[in-house]
Image (cartoon, rainbow, N blue to C red):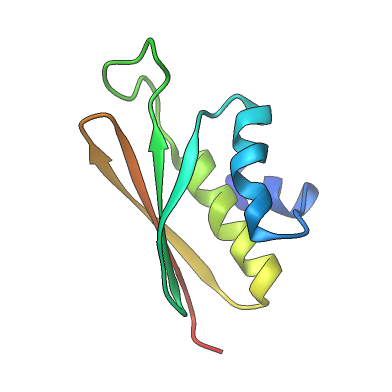
Length: 96
């Protein structure tokens, strides 16, 4: 199952629910770093036993994009940037 499909099956009521969902899902700790009208930046911290990402985080990125599409009613895209102790996730939505 892809991340956007998972987002449609488990829609959140508010963007602020994302960190608690990630922790409940066992995906790790995610924090919002920056926000603008059409972009959000999150940092997903690696699990304590991971020195580098042990697996692809495309599911998590797709889930974020899917939630933004549902919450804002527009197209969203997520990109990933690997960092030393985590992954930066950049969410871009079409201006409305």
